[in-house]
Image (cartoon, rainbow, N blue to C red; front, side, top):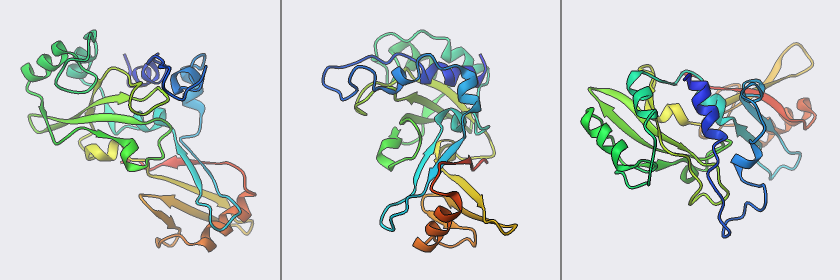
Length: 232
């Protein structure tokens, strides 16, 4: 299975419903993704931005989880494929989203936890769906156990964990950051650009100001603008 097929299966996986959550009849991410094809996600913008006219409103940004997880920061090696083929039973393993067999397999194959587990919800992430994960080490190589949140309430509704290897040219955290960049034509042969990298940055490399957002709003016409994610 390719990494695109694996990520597609995760963002469309039925992660269930709960009468206590706020998803309603069809408001959960996995429900909204039903009926969509892998081509849909391939063709959607990697990131989108909308700048509001009001000075006190921050730009609205959304980074596609599908594009982020398939941008080359992560890949699947033979160990990943072997782990991901294990059918997950009850979540009684050492790590979130794993059962005892999966956790035993990781230990038997030399994987060790690298720090604590994490959840992008705690970072106010702009990713289109919340990710939950655990960084792992094996013989000096970085791996990530990853779950995608498909439910409504962030406390539940996650996929089973899947194993990904981190590209040697980036750090594990970089593989799931929401950094992205946008630009619009200024009508004079140039462009106006703003980037998100934990904070808004203007095209001069400084912190973006209200004036930068106003200029972007003017030239974008307040429309949703497609952008790119920062790759490593």
